[in-house]
Structures are given as C-alpha cells and as structure tokens.
Image (cartoon, rainbow, N blue to C red; front, side, top):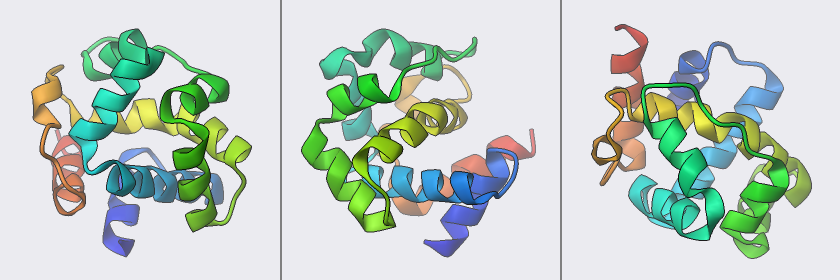
Length: 134
C-alpha cells in the first residue's frame, strides 16, 4: 500500500506523520468495509448522510467530530483499524473526522457518489492522481 499512501498524501497536500497515519486509517477502513461504496453506505445509514452528501458534492465539506465518526462506524470497526496502524480508537476517530471528508471529496470530483461506487484500493491511487492534475 506504499504507493497508495503516497498518492493519497500528495492529493491531500503533504506528507506529515499525522496525515500518513490518517491515510493508513482510511485505507484500512475501506478494506475492512469491503470497498468505498460500502463505507459510504455505512456512514449514510448511521447518521452522517448530510455530511457525506456535502463531501460528495462539489461545494464545501461539512465538518464532523470524532464522536460522530465513531458513532457512525461503530467502536469495534474503529478499534480494529486503529489497532492496525498502532493508535487508539479515540485518536483514530479524530483523524478520520479530519481526513475522511477530504478523501471522499477527492474520490467524487464530479459531485456524484457513483464515481466512488465499486472503487477498490488498487484504483484509488489512479482516481486521486487524475484529480490532482486537473
């Protein structure tokens, strides 16, 4: 996943340790959820439908709190992905609250959730690269 990490980091504007950890978290979350589409469905069904729509749309991204992310994803899933990257669940939810909106926004450049449906880890890098050079 090193190339994907680099691409996501570059798309988000840098590569500091916090950002690298956030990228790892998002990749783990996508993998554990069974894809981007499933992750978006989980967020939508568990209280973040409005925020998710703002991330997908071409307007500004609605901010969410770490508590909202934890509530939407569930503590078990959050703790699993946090453990994979070596941080606690609370830190993971805060990082996801900060970076997940940006990543979903990057994956849906046309404001259409369909752009991200069926996206797997191997194709995330290409989608982000494409959007970086627009």
